[in-house]
Length: 278
Ligand code: NAP
Image (cartoon, rainbow, N blue to C red; front, top):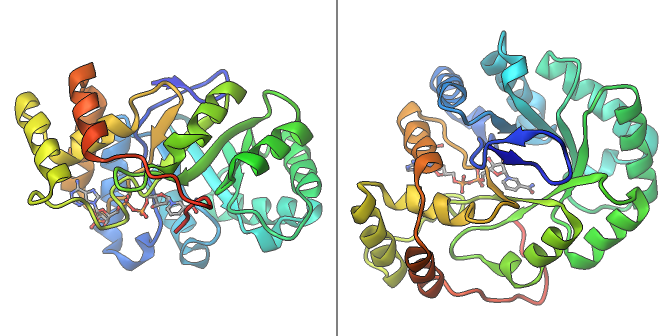
C-alpha cells in the first residue's frame, strides 16, 4: 500500500482494470474481481464508457457488501465533462455502481469543454461528498501542468496514462513531472492490452531470467517493474481468477537494483512526439 498522490489514503500499487469486461464471462469476471479484493487488489478502475455503463454494473456486483475495502475510480467521458454534465454523469455512475461515493473521479481524456469547467464540476462533487478526490487521464506534461495550475496544488490526485514495458514514453518526462507535482501516475494497459512480450524476444528473455530467480512469472516481474517507484500504480485487467491470482503475486515481489537495471536496458525508453494513448 502506498500514498496515492497528494491524498492521505493508502492504495495498493497493483489494482484491477475493467475495460471490455462486459465481453467476458460475467460470472468468472465478477469472481475474478472479488478474488482480487481478497488478495489486496482493492484499487478498482472503471469508467462510464466501459460497456456503456454495463461494466460499472458488474463492478457493483463485485464490490457488493465490500464497498469500504475498495478504492473505487471511475471516469467521465470528455463529451459529458461540462460543469453540470460532469455532476450528472457522476450521479449516473454512482447509481450503476450502487454506491454513494467514488474515491477518485477522472476526466477520461482531454476534450472540448474548458478544463476550468470540468474541474469546477469535480470540486462541486467533492464538496458534496460524491467523490473523495479527482484526477485526469491521458494528459501530457503541458496539460497536467495546466490542470494543477487551475485546480491548485494538492488537488489533482493522479494522471492515468498508457504505460507498459514496450511503451515507456511516460518515463521520459511525465513521470518526473508527476513526482515534482505530487501526482500519482497510474499506468494503464500494463500488459500492453493483450500484447505481452513473448519469451523469444530479448525483453522476454530478460523477464524470464529475473522471474526464475524469484520463482515468479514474467508478468509478475513486469508489474513489479512498472510499480518500482512510490508514485507508480498499475491496473491490469483480468477476467479470470487464475490471472488475477498471478497478478496479485506481484505485490510481494521486490526486484533488486540490478534486476531493475536489466529490465530497463531490455525495454528502452522511447520518447514519442505526442503522449501515446489507446
Ligand atoms: P492490460 O491490463 O494490459 O491487459 C489485459 C489483457 O491481459 C487481457 O486480455 C487479460 O486476459 C490479460 N491478462 C491479464 N492478466 C493476465 C495473466 N496473469 N496472464 C495472462 N493474461 C493476462 O489491458 P487493458 O485492459 O487495456 O488495461 C488495463 C486497464 O487500464 C483497463 O482495463 C482500464 O481499466 C484501464 N485503461 C484506461 C484507459 C484510459 O484511457 N484511461 C485506456 C485503456 C485502459 P483476461 O481478461 O482473459 O484475464
